[in-house]
Length: 256
Length: 331
Figure 1 (tube, rainbow over the protein chains, first blue to last red):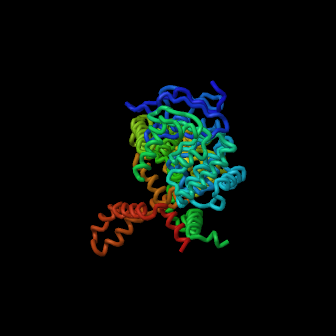
Figure 2 (tube, helix red, strand yellow; figure 1 turned 120 degrees about the vertical axis):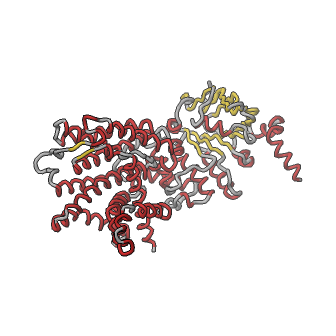
C-alpha cells in the first residue's frame, strides 16, 4: 500500500441488480485536490456515502491516514479528521450560524458530558467558530438563524461546518450545487484557498470549477473509474469524451 | 431593567409567587382542597418538566413517560408495605429503579426513530402497567395504601402537609433550574443538535446515541422522583398512575405550555389541571339559567370544551402558551 492519505481499494457496493461501486481503486496523496466527475447515476453519491460511513460497502477497504476505516461509524471517521459537506444542505436550521459552527468545534473539543456551564458563553467554542465563519465569508452573520439565510450562505456554512472540525481532509459533495455564477466564483476562490492547507476530494458537476481547481481527476461511470489523471490528460482522453464530456460537447453542437 | 418586564416573565413570576403562597392562603381560609390540588399540580409539573427535557429539547417523543411516576411510586409503596419506612432507603431505591428502567428502555428504543420510538416507549409502559395489575401481593389493580409517608430525620416531616408542599415546590424549582442548566450546557446543545439534525451531528463527529441515552435516563430519573412525591402525597399507589392516558396528559401539559421552553411545562400543568377542576363548575354556572337541572349533567362533559381549547393551541400557537406570551413582547 502507498503512503497516500486516502486509499480506496477494490470498493464494491451493489443495490439489487445495480452495481453502484464496481471495484473502485483510488489513492489521494496528502495535499492533493482530487476531483471525481461522472454522469448522473455513476455512483458518486454512493462513493461519498461509503467514505463517510453512511453506506457499508460489500467488499473492498478504505484506509485513511494509516487507519482501516472501512468498518468505522460516521462519527469516528470525523474524529480521525475526515470531514464532509452535504450535497443537499444539512444544517441545524433552528440554530444561529454561530451555534452551528460552535457545535462542530465542540465535537472535536473532548467529550460533551458537561452539564452545567453555559456552552454559548464558552470562548473556547465561540472564538474558533467566529474565525471559521469569517474564513468562509460569513463574518457579521453570526447571530442569524440558519433558516433565514440564503442558499449561497447555506453552502458557505456547509464548508464552515466541515472546516470547524479541523480536518485533515475534506469530502465536498457538490459544493457548487444550485449556486448562481457569482456565488460559484466566490466558492471557487474559497476552495482554492482551502486547497493550500487541506487534502480535498471534490465531487462536482460544474466542469469549469473542476478543471480550475483539480490536481487530478477521476472519471466514474457505472461505478467504475474509467480514467484517472491530470486535467489535461482527462480532457484529451477519448473514452472520457465518449462517456461523459462528449455528451456535453454533443449538446453544445446541438445548440449551435 | 425593563428588558426583564416581558409578559412571559411577569406571568411566570406571578405564577411562582402564587405557588409559594398557596399554603399561606390555605391556612388563612382553612381550605385544604386548594392545598391538595396544588400539591398534585406541583408534582405533575415536575413530571412534565422532565418530559420536556426529552420531548421538547431532545425531540424524543416518549409516549410512556408516566411509567416513571409508577416506578417511583411503587418503590415507595412496596418498601412501606414491607415495613421499610425510611425515606433514606425508599427515595434512593425509587430513583435508582427509575434510572435503571430508563437505561433499559432507552438503550432499546433510541435505536429507532419517529413512530417506532413512540410505540416502543408506549409498549414498555404498558408492560409495567400490566405487571402492576398482576401484583397480587401489592393490591393488583386495586392499588396499595401507604400508611406512613417516607420517614426522614427530625426537622423533615413529610406528614406535615405544609412542609410537604414546600418540599415539592423546592424540588420542582430545582428541576426547572437543573433542566435549564442542562439544555444550555455542552451536553444540552448536543441533545438539541440531535433533535435538529442527527445526521449532521454524526457527520461532525458526535456519537449522539450515548448522549441521547443519558438524557433519557436523566428525564426518567427526574420523573421517578416526582412519582415518589406523588405516592407520598396520595398515600396510595395503583397501576392507574402509569396508565397510557397519564402519559398522554403529560404530553398535553408540555405541548400546551410550550415545548423546549424553561417554564412551559409548569404553565401547561397548571393550566390543564386547573381547567380540569374549574371547567365543570364553569359549565354548570353558565348552563344553569338555560338548562336548569340538566346543567350538572352537561358539566360532566367538560372535556368537550377542553379538547377544542387544546386543538386551538396546537394549531395556532406552536410554542404553546409560553410562545404566545413571548410573541406579545414585540407588540
